Length: 325
Image 1 (cartoon, helix red, strand yellow):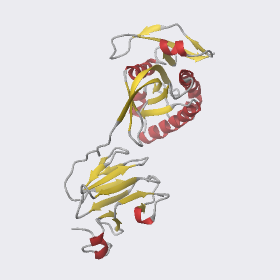
Image 2 (cartoon, one colour):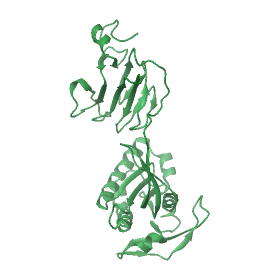
Image 3 (cartoon, helix red, strand yellow):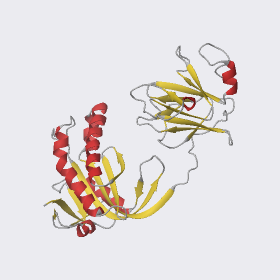
Image 4 (tube, one colour):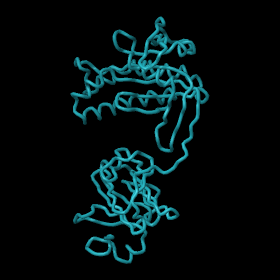
């Protein structure tokens, strides 16, 4: 049954019959209310710059200023939902990817923060899997310098830490690292759990190698200060520590609008592997490849180069410890 046909708390029958779709907030609850969807609708806490016809305001600390967007595709009789939020959106209980449109059909339920909504339409009723809209993905190959920071003993720390404390502390740590990254003109490519991945395109950033090494060294120097303010501790009760890897080379770069950058290639793999070795078993906190060391201007001290065998790679990597003079 389409909302608006019967029952209190539903929109008037003429409104339901003229609107191609409805979004029902708090379905099956006493506070249930419906909003017509004429062509597109933005849902969030503020939705600044969106006119009343095309926005739905929902308050809540877990709801972003612009949380999600609902669009109707009349040419193909399809409806699409796109998440733009910080905390995510669930469609029929499953979290959807950020910035990737997924198809939504009549009767589907959407959860954002503590709010729930249900999509209703007589037109957009065809059953559909959650598939991504066909977006042309641009892929380029470019020379880059890459830095990865990796938390020492993260798996052990995560196993025993309260999940909320873990999330809040990692967020505070990465917020500090992002400030350092901004000063050194780097781009945050991604961060997942214990990995902080930053890049510098050599054609776009003057002195990319110097900026990348400076970022890694400053981050390593700043970590004791940052970690002292965090509740998380390493398995021995000490402050958090991180290993840093720096490498350079060509990489395949892909980006979809609103998403973090995906960077793939041998140099990327080397950077991640070095970060997982740095700061362990007596190694320096910052490890750089010999290619990075040769391209780094004065101002840094380096240890002697040594061949390091990294996981999944047949050829050893010649790496050196880096610090400030």
